[in-house]
Structure formats: C-alpha cells, structure tokens
Image 1 (cartoon, rainbow, N blue to C red):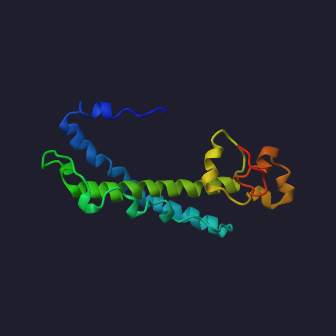
Image 2: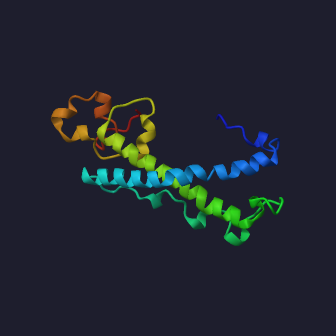
Image 3: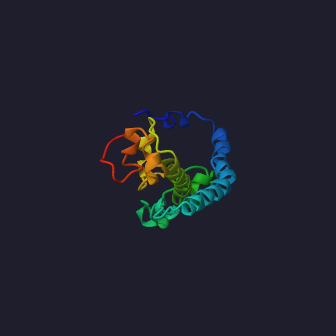
Length: 171
C-alpha cells in the first residue's frame, strides 16, 4: 500500500510553519461546506423527484459518538507550549470528535449521492465503477424501458450495481 509521507517530515518543520499551517485545514471546510450542503440537498431532491427511495441520510456516515476512543474528560492533549492550541484538550475534542468525523461524513455523503446519480443515469462500466457499489440501485434509467435496455452492452445490462436481477459479477 502506498502511503503519504508526513510523520517522517513533521519534526523537521519550523514551529512557525506548523502554527501557520494549522488554520489552513479549517479554511477549505469553511469555504466549501455551504456549497456542499446546498449541492447534496439539490442532488437528493433530484433523486427523490425521479423516484429514489431508501437513500441513506448524512447521519449514516457520521460515526457514533460512543465509538470514539476517548470520552471528553479522557481526551489526551500534547505536552507542548501553552500558546499552542494542541496543548488544550478542547482542541482535540473539537477536532477529533467534531471537525474530522463530520467533515469526512459530509464529503462521503456527497460522493455517495453522486454515485447514485451516476449509477442511475450512466450504467456504463469503466475501470473505477466497482467503487460505486456502495451506492447500488435496483435498476438504472436504462433498465426501466426494455427497448432501451437492449442498447446496453451485456456486461452493463447484467451488472449488480445497477440491476438487482443480475448475477453477482465484477465490473
């Protein structure tokens, strides 16, 4: 498995770069969250208007609070200068229990909805399509009308990601 190299370089970074870099993780979230939320409401509305049912909610992607390793009172903090936000338990509670899981869930949910759209409108295989199985649907737009179904490649007609009648196979 390829890994991003970060821990091996962290201690070589000057403190000013780290202090300047920490707020940068919040700016993309602050600037994109409103648009992502609007986007997922629009996509979810689209899916409902074309007949979508049993669509997972955002909260299905958020980890249960009880599943976090530490209770708030037990959350560790780093022994570092009291001027560094990582010195305070609140910093870790905010980030590890709110910012990270809620942000990851938001973007995973948006991707899930777009994968449903892709499976519905475009049941055509490509080399990454198997990753869309998380958003499997009963049948695609093309499977609804038998006259259109015959236009699909046999592998696309019989793909279980967008056809519940298909035998289990890989894209």
